[in-house]
Image (cartoon, rainbow, N blue to C red; front, top):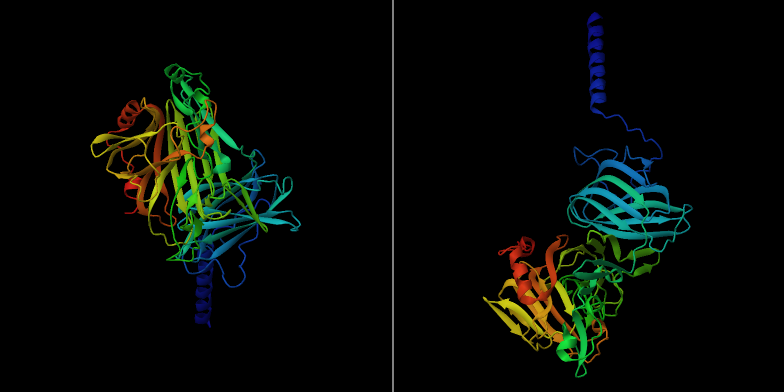
Length: 521
């Protein structure tokens, strides 16, 4: 009897010890401190989204501890961090269920080891009207920002219902949601400007933030009419003995006649032969996947709102402009060039810095499609200018080459040049004054002209709106990869090309952009 009692006491002690051990290893539940959203829903029964229990470090309830609170500016914040595991090509729903009033801007602090698409669903609290806007997340830790509800469908009583995250990759994804905030942003303007004593640039938000204006702030630059033709140069009124028309900052040196002109990002991908991409049509032939920052061949603009049922697609994702500092940032989701109002699965980002007589632009393009892209010549960037300047100049195979009267840049035209050992070129007038551009790390270029030179226009004509244009693009030769950003930097300046060349070379005599040179490695 005593022996049995001793065994019972030992067994009871072991149970007590085991209970204490489990309690010590189990974290206390966080105080919700307010309204706690429901956990992830099971999407339709065919795709469970999360996969609990298969990872030793995977929490049983990835949403325990989230809570809503109000911060300065009445911005609603969703706190974490909490980890979600998403199966390949599957999705997880985060129930938000919170009224955010008139908020139209989401800030999401998140880390993911797989590329993700997101979908934010919002509407009125009764659920009678709902809208969904999509977005994309790169791999890695990031603060993602998105402007939504552009038309203020739900201006004063907006109820954010759900955030869906979909794994775009064929590998299991781990996502750590750190914080979700909602704020109010002003509507973006149709265009933004940066200006200093030397230069004035304009970014068209309707066209994805692409450059649509570049001018020289010196009234000695004059547009004149001579022999029925328009010419642009320093003190040209005196040179040609005619009256000056536009001067300095009134003369736009870029061509902006349609959404395919400007100075902008453009990339080429699948032709449909290796996947289910359906090519568009341009110039009478099938056209591959071609995200273009400005818009499409039908002159639809990237910044336009596309509404299909309750799904909204806004071409401007985010922006920030500091005119005093001379800097701007734009993030856009472009259109497919050869289709009609077809939004691509692609993000383009531009960082503009205006300093002195030089504009520096950092570009980033990221493809989130599942298309299987082939080799292509990628424009870095596409540049279109006025045809008052005819002569194209660059440095090829150890010497400066001046090429006047170039023809159209189409295939077989002889307008493709290799051996760019200094990575710059310029369109200039007969006095060698013009607009110069420089993309480090590229050794291949295409260039040419469409229309007549000099253009048949007067001294006050808007040369930037004419069909006649010059063109060049530094070319990268590689296969665009899904989810892998393409990044490069380019520079624009105005002046004598010899002086601008010296400026470019002084930046770094061996300057190369490793992101371009080793993108395909």
